[in-house]
Image 1 (cartoon, rainbow, N blue to C red):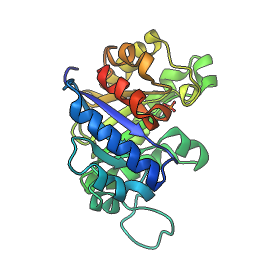
Image 2 (cartoon, helix red, strand yellow):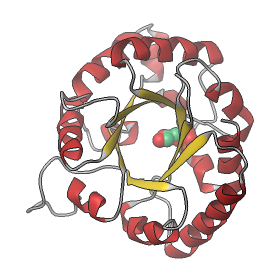
Image 3 (tube, helix red, strand yellow):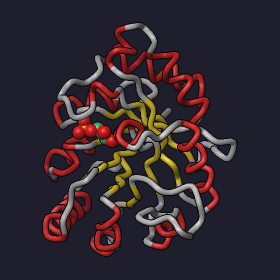
Image 4 (cartoon, protein in one colour):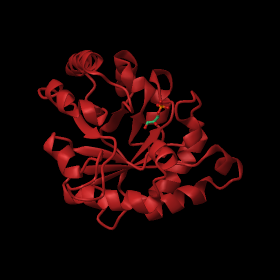
Length: 242
Ligand code: 13P
């Protein structure tokens, strides 16, 4: 696929008012100065910071989103967030099925699909995450694991306009290990065969120094960045490598 790359920053459970303001102000200034028109940037701060970040980003070209949402309309679900609430804060995107939620909150692919369906109904673009464990890759099961996750996590409401897929091999998240160029090429071609025109992002230890190679791999339409998205210079280096 051609066109501008999608550069998504997932802040995970990081961000207090002061550091979030400083980070977004520096980033906004850097994006405004950037002469590279080859990327679209999205920030997904923790839920507590979305409102503030939406104000910090208001005049910028950067869009924002949530890191999760519930699969039910607003109601009696203590501690949860409905997609309508993300929409209300100007979010365009929501990350769903991140491996940290699949692992720590026991989220199943069926639940991810249910969340995605409701998010689509509210007009959010879903970034649906898939990826195999280290042991699954060692056992040669990475393609079948990802195929199953795609089949069960993508609802029938999904189109290439409202759904982005993020391939994040679990063993590459926050470990400093990235998948090899060949592994990324192979898996993204495999996913392309399953999801047609949907954009496909790579995630897992993406940083300034490896971004160019990753972003210029066939069928990589952008990146989902964790740790490096908290550092403005590093995140900009990734975006500029588009
Ligand atoms: P890291 O970039 O910190 O490896 O995290 C990747 C990720 O999980 C993004 O969603």
